[in-house]
Every structure is written in C-alpha cells, then in structure tokens.
Length: 318
Image 1 (cartoon, helix red, strand yellow):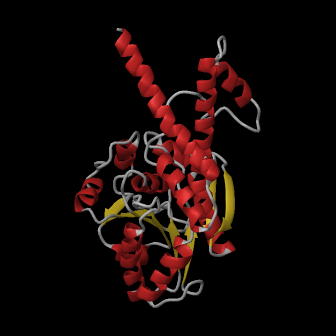
Image 2: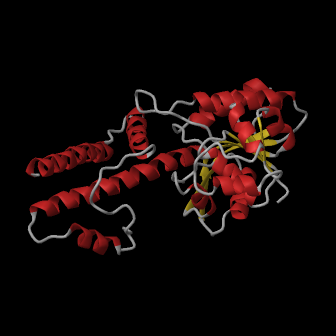
Image 3: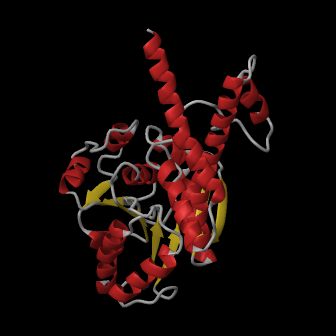
C-alpha cells in the first residue's frame, strides 16, 4: 500500500485505528495534543487500557510513531483520519468542538504546505450536515485551498466496542464511506480492504447519507433492545412462557437475527443513549416527530425502573 496515513486523536478509538492500520503494513503516524500520550507511545507503552493495545505498541515499536505536530500529518501522509471526541450537548446534538480544533490545526499546516492534494477523513460521530456545512468550509477558509481541487473529504464512522476495538476494526460487519467523490471513496475503501482480515460489506454513499446512517444504525439497535425487553415484560405476566425461547426462535429468522434480541437490562453505555437522543433531535430539526424513538427511550426508562423494583422486592424478602 503506497498511501501513507495519519490519525489525529489517539484516544480509546483513535489509537486502535492507528495501530490496526500500522499493523496491516500501512505507514501510519499518530497525532495527539496530549504530550504524555505521545511520549508513552514513542517509548513503547500504551496510554490506553484496551486488549491487544500493548502487544501492538510493542510489536510496532519503531514502525509506528506519534507526534504533537499536525504539520507532519500533512507533509508526511496522504490521508488523515480525524477521530476525536464529540460529546453530547444539552439538546441531544453532538459538539463539534474537538473536530473543528483538529481541522483548524491541520488546515493551517495545509495552507503553509506546497502539497496540491490531501484527503481528510472524518471518523467521529457528528450531527448530519456537519461535514458539508461546517468542516469543509472551515478547511477552505483557513487553508485558502479549494475543495475537490486541492483536497477531498470523506466520512468514515467507526462501529467498534470498547474491549474489542482491535478485533472490531479488523473484522467489521460493515464499513460506511460517505464520499466527496468516487475517487476519494475508493481510496478509503482500499485502506479498509488492506486493513480488514475479513471481507466486510462496504457501503459507499454521499457524506450526509453516511452521517445519517451512523446514528440510524445505533438507533435501530436500541429499538431492538427495547422490543426484546417489552417481550420479556409480557412473558413475566403470562405463566409458562420463556422469553429466551421466544427471542431465540424469532431471532433465527434472517429478517430479524438474534443479535441484541434478548430480554433483560436496559440499553446504556457511551453510544446507544446519545445516538438515540441525537436521532430524535435531528428528526425534530427537520419537522419530523420521532414517535418511534421516543417510545424506545420511554421503554428503556421504564425498564430501569422495573429492574430496580425487582431488586428492591428481592432484598425486602431476604
């Protein structure tokens, strides 16, 4: 693979992406604003506790390097991934603060560079429309260079879980690429084909379609979890029923699948609640009442109350 890659943001997911790219033989640079993170990586230590990270950092010692300097990402690589935090804000949307900060530093370096082409890839989860309306104009304004003439942009979200980051990057079920042009999308696809150990479904589409697809996937999963919990609560009221037998049976239908179809705990974690809320906020922004996702969220809230009541009653009987 002749393309050289940089990854900006060496947190829990960004470091995993960088390590997987480097481990596949792609020349990769990591960029982070935290000097301790950079120093740890360059001294052969992982700053993040995650399976396989230390093994890969040690294995790639001398082959993968981290830097504080965004200029190196521009001058020494052809493609730059931005995978930084996009924390939720009060109304359910995602904050673009850290993505914009990373792009500002990269665009400044790009503006000083004599390079004529660079591909920027946004991998952070963002509110649909952010790339076209905010990120691309920001790069143009700061760098003084022209979109689709001097640089391209793609949206390439991750679908990984903490605890299995390396496994998930190397063996995804799905890769979504929102592309500014077929040529730019093909370059990102080639990286995934080189890095992946399996042959995932690669879906290429417009940038904004990719942004919507990312939040839609997680919103669908939460709907499936809430449905399974609804079946479980019904089974508690119908003597002789077994929710696991039921969900195992209907999950065998290929139209449904067994994944995330098990009654029990409410959904939680870092992505499911916020992506569901973001989907609802985005829907309202476009004058669409998110009736379905509002019901999913309501079921989830009630499930937590229901499980708390079960525990409380159990302890009262002890």
